[in-house]
Length: 120
Image (tube, rainbow, N blue to C red; front, side, top):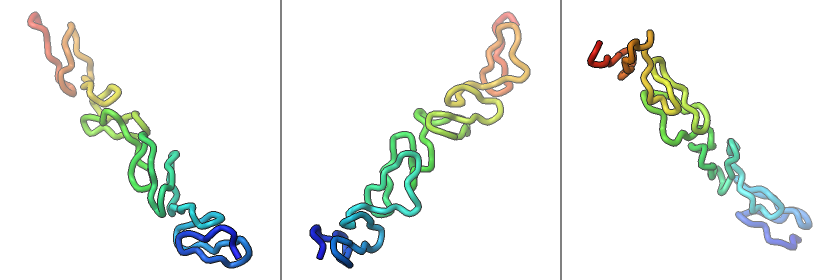
């Protein structure tokens, strides 16, 4: 006999012992199970359903979120951290890189493209 009812189709298998089914666990089968587990602080809110923190996304909270997003084919490698492709820099890969750098007050307007001042 179980003093508390077994939830989610669990059965009372011994005194105060529930035998849980499917993706449920706990003393009364009321704790959802996620398989695979939720990552990066995600919370298993229902069977195989992760509730992710704002910094992570996807089914098991395994993909980092960058806000704002990474530009110019940059990759979000951890929350709010972009890895830029060649010729781009800055927090969101928004700054073009010129190699060699622009001289005489020239401005790098696109990758390896210098915009010169009127006197040059």
